[in-house]
Image 1 (cartoon, one colour):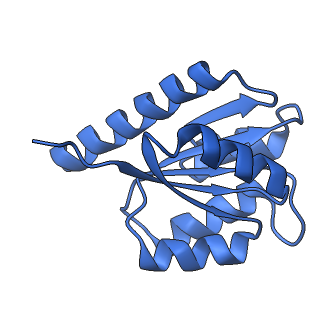
Image 2 (cartoon, one colour):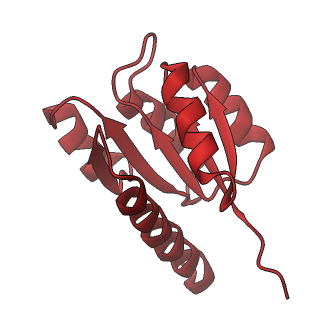
Image 3 (tube, one colour):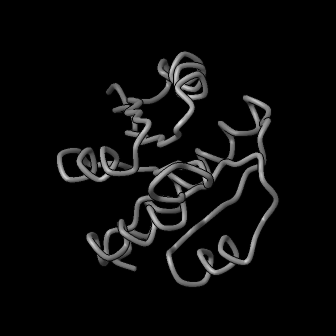
Length: 134
């Protein structure tokens, strides 16, 4: 039986980052990308997403603000949540770990195989939590 691909949403205001990510990971995952947090929320309304990845520094809505909005719109739903950013951890990101279900922070630039391993860990963790009802 063929295993279904997991769905990943990546929100980043830099289109180059989105294109590279999609080209690297599209054989292993169904990739949804957007340059705007608002469009990311629209995708979440339409698609079952297993992992949300967002940049932190974006216009209009930061990655943490995006995750806060996701949490308020989807209480009890637990896709994995990751921030990938070239900026150091800030108090806002630390708060996101506590209050907005942020699971992981990854610094840019990232190593492709390392990021795939981290994504798999988060997807597996969230899938097992959903199955156990946590």
